[in-house]
Length: 319
Image (cartoon, rainbow, N blue to C red; front, side):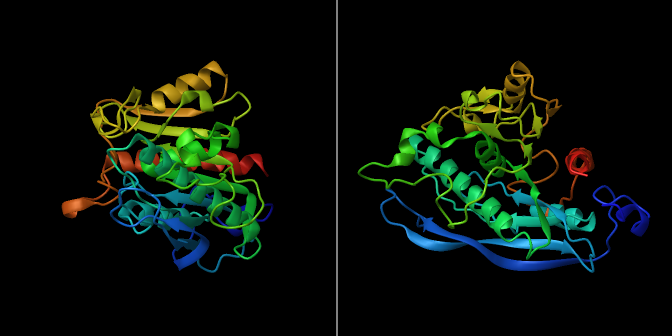
């Protein structure tokens, strides 16, 4: 980046130095078996294209750009890359000089089934692996740095990112191998596309996310991580509990506070931002949407400022 500070009067990746953003819609990054809208078992699937929208600054002369993958909320039941918060975050990121990617991933969850919940997360992880491998394969085409692929997730999108960095092939839960009513989902890196690359992002931002098992975090898994969570989150607990605050077939999860504690035990650097008494998606959205004329609230700028500051540090490490 030797010339960036001369070309731009403001700091790239920190300030919004571009006025216009170019968006390429519905780029296919993979193809995988998808469930119908309503289902009892997972034996009947139909392959679908997995798509992403790519946002980049217009008239950008820099070729070695970091990329942020934005992954939407929705509880593995609803949501898309067109969510209000995802589109706005992508626009902001591109104006700062990043390449921003809004991804769709496969949905489908039976709220009455423990196994279905585990498999829904795992399919999301497979799609996360596919998009990271796709970006590394085509880094020259999109002028991105394959060593600077960052993940930024909201709720379910954060569950995908967290499990993507911590789940190893030998840690797959039994339900992902299939049964009489559900097919084997296959390995983490062998779904979506055939590209052979490291599928781990280089840093993760998790907003109101969680892990299914803290033992997935090993001492050598020190990918930089920033965690945001409200202590009054009734959808994804900030410590330990059942999603939606209801004891059900869906397994308990471990939220940001306990993930942070595990990191402290292993002496892994990370950032934790807990907002006292704040709910799920406390920056102003419901399932990623600014409903009833709402707009980002006072927490929006705090979260985005801290997140871009965190990512800029990761970029500077590679200079």
